[in-house]
Amino acid sequence: MEKLIQPEIGLIFWMTLSFVVVLYILGKFAWKPILKALSEREQNIEEALNTARKAKEEMIALKSDNERLLNEARGERDKMLKEARDTKDAIIAEAKGKAQAEANKIMASARDSINNEKMAAITELKNQVAKMSIEIAEKILRHELSQDEKQKALMENLIRDISLN
Image (cartoon, rainbow, N blue to C red; front, side, top):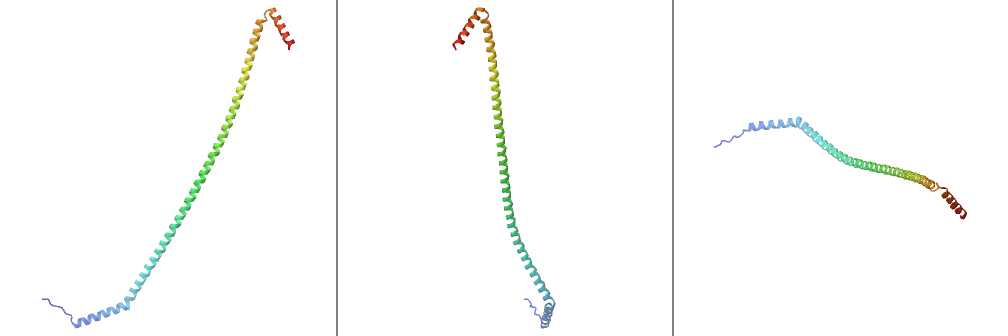
């Protein structure tokens, strides 16, 4: 069987006395600094948590500010793009109007030029026809009036026509 070890009373006394002395020394010198260090650590942790909470709140506020600024920037960008499109459309419309006016002006000028050329051609044609008619009439008259009797008959016809009118 096993033998049980039993401490003696002297050993228990000295162990108790040592424990009380160590406990007194710890209480006198160690507990206060340990508790103070623990208290400081607790305060530091609490401050760190408060700082982190504040930083988180600031981050949320900054994020909402950033979102607001982004939305404003998008609105400004859209406004600028719309103004640019409107300006572009106005410039294009103005250019089209000027081009149309210039085209109409050129067309009117071309019509006038064509009409002038047409009238000049018609006048030239009439002049040539009149010239040719005179030449033909002159040739016919020369041929017809080459004999004296035909000349006298023509004169008499002309005189009768004049006196009848």
